[in-house]
Length: 209
Image 1 (cartoon, helix red, strand yellow):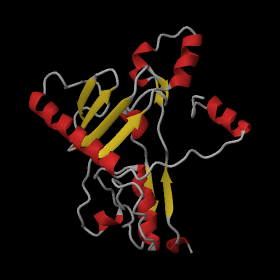
Image 2 (spheres, rainbow, N blue to C red):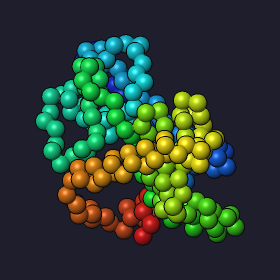
Image 3 (cartoon, rainbow, N blue to C red):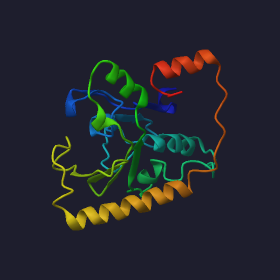
Image 4 (tube, helix red, strand yellow):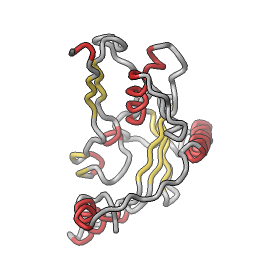
């Protein structure tokens, strides 16, 4: 039974524990938040003890499961996601990762009530990881660029000193977000929620109204 059971251990996000001057997970796209474990046990397809270095993200797990069970891919699903079996089958897998983070309104309001200045965190953020580099844009027009191979902790922003690379990553950013908009599927109506559920989600910071 065990060898015919696919076991997946992962997380939806990490947490800052003082890194970047922040505690919690509501304030950005730092590697401390997005670089989470992914462990899969299924000997039929995954070699025990093997480690992969290719870019992977959580949305890939869904399509990996679909691939393993032989389900048909939903054409209106996440167009940028890929099954991890593509890597095992030595198909083209290397890809650009995409991340985004809305303005954390509830968290900002709470912090301000406590007298904490969080104006620098009052922004939307979008980022990509490609070719070992991470490029980020904010709704305030800020840009960040990191060499993850040398600076995984994101301590040195290279945007001002990497003209050609910064331009290439900026173009890649526009390209990948353009594709994401095209493949995100049709707009879906918001599900109806009772008042108790709405208040619980609001208290946890998942909705703002």
